[in-house]
Image 1 (cartoon, helix red, strand yellow):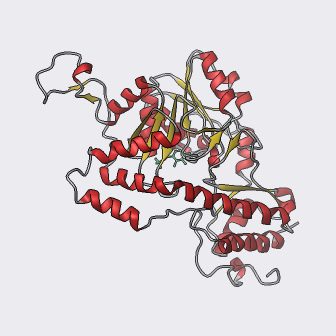
Image 2 (cartoon, rainbow, N blue to C red; image 1 turned 180 degrees about the horizontal axis):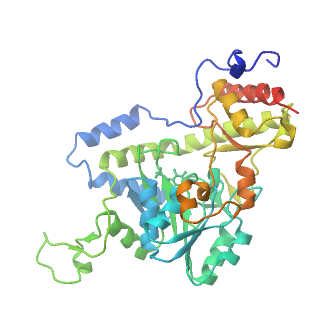
Image 3 (cartoon, protein in one colour; image 1 turned 180 degrees about the vertical axis):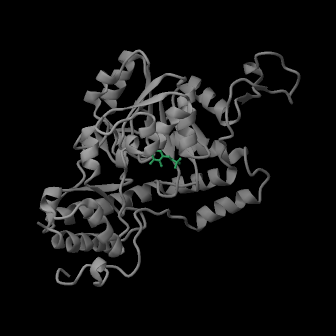
Length: 402
Ligand SMILES: *Cc1c(COP(=O)(O)O)cnc(C)c1O
């Protein structure tokens, strides 16, 4: 293997077919669940949505769940429910998908980025307090890769300063923190149902909460800010047709056939999680015995949480390599290994620069960002796929070793 040339230099590829970094798993039961709704009375706003919400709430051990058109819409709704408005500040992590911060901008607020912990890559709770001021209204921690953030510390700061915690658990369906399921801990928790995430509805998202005030706000925001509940009408009630638009909401509804797919997928979540964990255990074992192991850092896991392993992110030790991460990335892609980078620190995007966020505000994330690579990880991956990834890493890292 070592003596064969890299694919990027015209050598033979480690794999014949491309291995993506993530992928959904849809079976015949899922397809049947969707078809049965397509043949039924309601395509949207029917009973399948409530059923799915009850199942998700039950799974994470929360009182309420509200499903949305996508995870980003769900985050937007959570910011609305938390009362985020013009001029408010919301603390979040830079190492995330842009949606975790964009949802604050949608409400006219300003995201404040607090640097990450260099081991867990989650927001560094020790650095949050110095960013809290009279404008701060909420914290949006992200459970990066599926590993819960330092939730006890975050919730303590939030309680002391009257802040709402909206946990972005897009990666963390099925994760636990100190024995509790993610989804039952923060004021509101968001799960994404995009195809690369743990379960999918095509597009979709959910907020879970134990608070009936947030629950009612979320329901209202999802459908134009309209209410039909006679007890919530504020002017008059002219009959069962009557409704009021009381706030500016959106059409952020999910469809019934998507919700049915979600319920069917949720049945398989334990299997999906188990298969992810098995692949992670094999990665950990192979990369610990790896002859090039001095050239990378495998994911650190804090004892307080149990990750649901959405992503497996390694960090390259640039001091041991002749080339940068981007070169290693290109070489692995040529070997047919679908590596990826999660994420560009949000404030480095041109839109955020234009809003006045400067390079250098979170030095830890900027350094780590240059060296991280996401390895393929999804439930349908076989052991042989994990071996292919490790073989390709071996080939590429030994070639570029200093
Ligand atoms: C996927 C994701 C989202 C957004 O979810 P969508 O369903 O794609 O809108 C938000 N935050 C993080 C961290 C994500 O990975």
